[in-house]
Image (cartoon, rainbow, N blue to C red; front, top):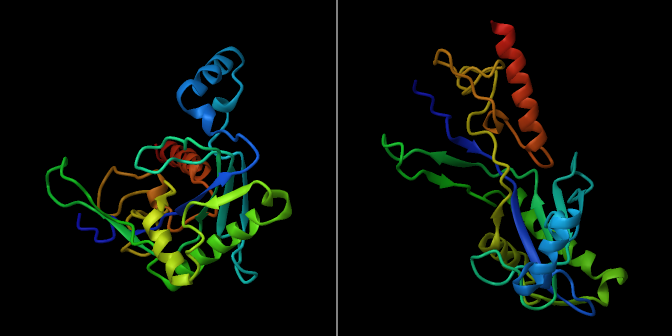
Length: 250
């Protein structure tokens, strides 16, 4: 079936991490690399506790970028570890911490498209991040808010150099450029097979692919928009609802 909206309308949380040097404390970097891992492996093996029993970010919260927002549009995290420079995810050799955030209500739309009839051919993936003024303002607001947090008295004595994007990055234009350079996927993509009432929508309200018999989609691609948070729970809810629909159709 020719369904032009398949792969279109991609919405995704865009994430940005701001690692810093940590002053006056060891942090967690040393526990995740080299010989520092040995006692952590032992502790986890014996007690299921320690650094290996936690997620990468121990503290989080949701905020609005402005009072006019109708729901939280930023998800923020904090951790007493920082990533080393380079493509591999290893911790830095010096004490560090990271503040990290995601824009959870972006308006930019991208695409995921096939490039060939060959199923092994590479996809054409274009997230198209920060392509709207709304999202560029959000990126700037998030970086400035994270900087405000680390300047609070409870943090200030432990805050060293801001490694990314760096103290020299101050103008809105420079922040947007740095954000795009260092951005990562939130792994919460939705809407490439969006559900809707209109005939051009990929699936209907029973998750059936329009124009194809016997095919339903039950994952986050059918969500027409993003939630202000992780997509794990919505994915499970879609699965449960799909099971109810299929059983009811028998």
